[in-house]
Length: 91
Image 1 (spheres, helix red, strand yellow):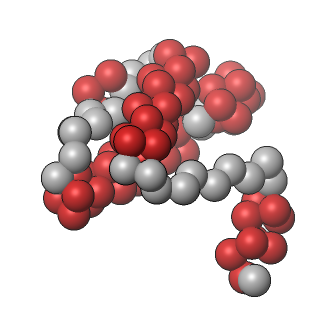
Image 2: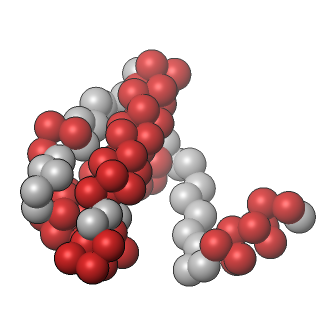
């Protein structure tokens, strides 16, 4: 989301930003159904014409999800690069 917002003027990343938000919203919806947790509505504040704000809203939703995980003692993993993620995922 941040990269899409940062490079939007050069590459018109509205599509990739929207698809990222929509995929994340689907994940939140699935987690709500499975764990009956608090609903996170990322798409409510998504604005295709303001990717900077949408990136901020995305981060806020991720922090809200993290707090729900913390409350449930679910470990949250963070990766700085896709390579770091792949290494852990394939291990």
